[in-house]
Amino acid sequence: MWMVRESKIEDRLRELMLDLLPAERLYLYGDKAYVSTFGVMGAYKRRAGQQLGQQYNEYNAAMSSCRIAVEHGFAHVANLWSFNDFKSQMKIGLSPVPAYYLVLSVKSQVSFNELGEAVVP
Image (tube, rainbow, N blue to C red):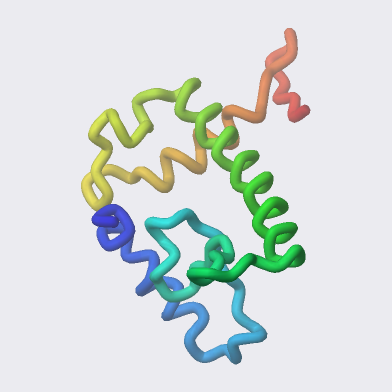
């Protein structure tokens, strides 16, 4: 949870969304660490002694498959560019982690042909 606080994502989301009506807001879909923050939603949970309805189970399954795809993307970038991985002690505020990640994500998707021209699959 400390990383959520360190990132100040909740403050940024408030700045961007607070003046909008709830139906107009965009939300991030996060795991358990993020669910209790403004602008972030997570999986529906059943209440004690009750079953979760089929519609909610289907929503959770669909969102879970999207999260898996995103997590695989993170893993792909981390495997190619391990210096930008959280475990390598990159520090929010001390290193331009978001800028590195953006550039490395793009580089991960681009290859070059024999003429040195960029090829995007």
